[in-house]
Image (tube, rainbow, N blue to C red; front, side):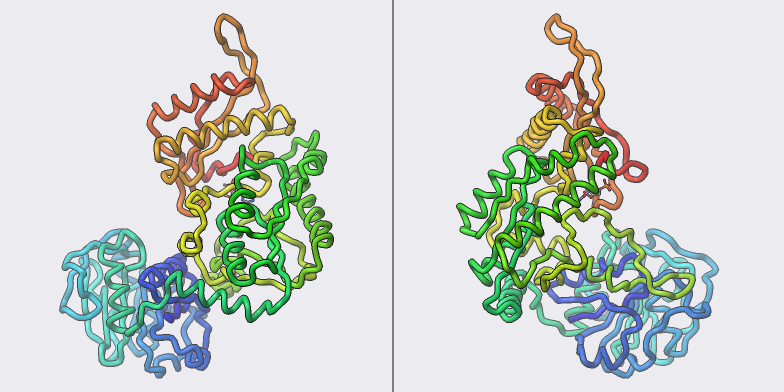
Length: 515
Ligand code: XMP
C-alpha cells in the first residue's frame, strides 16, 4: 500500500488512481493521520499531496512531526514538498515568479526517481511559493527556468519532493516518475489487480454475510450490475436482486436486463412491474424538481413494500465507490480555516438512495474502487461489454428528458428517438466517444412540411457530450453527417416529430440533463 496524506488538493484522488494504475493499492487519508496510525498501517510509501495553503500561513496544515522517523519512503508533491522542506528545517517563501502551467524540467543529476524521464520533459506546475533553502542532507535533482528547486531528495533517508504535478496527464514522464517511486524507491509488488480484488472481495463478503440473505436494487448501470455479479459469485442464491421497472427506461432495456441476469447468468432477479404506479405519481406534474421528488419517493415506497414481500433480508448491498468514501470522510481542507470540508459538489442525484432509518446492514464490496476499476472488475466477472461501457443514465430515466408533463404519447416518441440516436452512434463505432448521447423531447410544437402536407409536431433535441466525470462537460463536435443521419431517421421514423435540433451548450452553464 501507498498512503496519500491529503492536504486538500483537487488532485489527491488522481494521485491514488495513478498509483493504482501501477497495480499497487493506494488510499487517500487525512493529513492529520498520526505517525502511530501510519505505523499500524505499515504502508510501503507515503505521498504528501498538494494543497491550497501556504506552509508559512498561520494554521496551515502540517503532518505529524513523527512521520519523519518512521523509516518509510516519502515523496511530497507541490505543497507536500514544501511541508517536507519546512518541517525538516529548510525555508519556503513566496516565489518571485509564480509558475502555472507547463514548464520544462531539467535534470541536475540522474537517479532512480527520474529513470526514463527525459531531460527537458514537460511537467505541469501550479505554485506561488518556492523552496529557497533545503534542509540538511537534501540535494537538488532538477530545476525549471523559474524554479531552481523543482525536485529535491535526501536519498539516504528516501525523502523526495517535486514542485510539479507528476499525476496530471500533461506531465510527460509523470507516470514514469510515479512508477519509479512505487517500485524503485518503495519496492512495492504489483498485487493490486482486478483478479486479486475479486478473490478478496468474495472472501470478505462470505465472511461478513455468513448464511444470511442479501438484497440488491438492480438498475442495470455498471455499479449495481457489477455488484450483482460479484455477490452472485460469493453467495449464489442468497442474493436477491430487485429490479423495479418505473416505466422510464430506454427501449428494450428491461427485457435485455432480464435476459442477461436471469436467463444467461442465472442470477436471482425479481422483476417488479411498477410502471402504472410511477406514471400515476407524475401524471400532470410539470415542475422538474417535483417530478424527481415524486419518482424518488415512489421508488422508496415500492422498494419497502417489495423487500417486505420478498424478505426478510439481513443485508442490503450498495454500490458505494471509493470517491463516495473519501467524500464522506471529508478529507479535504478549507484553505481559509484549515477545517475539513468536502470540496467537491456532492452529486444530488440519488433516486436509488434509501432512507437513513434503514433496517438493513450494508454490504459494500466496491467501496475501495474507482469507477474505471469497477469496469475492469466487471469485465473479469464476465459482464457483457455493453453494460461495462454503458453511458450514465439518470435514475428518473426518460421522465426527466421529457420537459414538462410526461404523457404516454411523449414517452413513446422519446423512447423511439433515443433508440435511433444510440443505434446510429453504435453503427459508426462512436459510442465510446461520448460521455452521454441522448434525445430530449420539448413540449411545444412547430410547423413543418412532409409530402405536401403541413405538419405540427414536437421538436427533439440531441444532446451529445464529452466529459471526464460529469461535473463539467462540453458538447461534442460531431461530424455533420452523423447529425444528418440521426435527424433524418428521427423525422422519418418517429411519428409526432418533425424537427431535430442540436444542443451546443457546455456545462457549466448548462447541465447535462435538461431537467
Ligand atoms: P447534470 O444534469 O446535473 O447531470 O449535469 C450530471 C450527471 O448526472 C446524471 N444524472 C443522474 N444520475 N440520478 C442519477 O443516477 C439522477 O437523478 C440523475 N440526474 C442526472 C446525468 O445523466 C449526468 O451524467
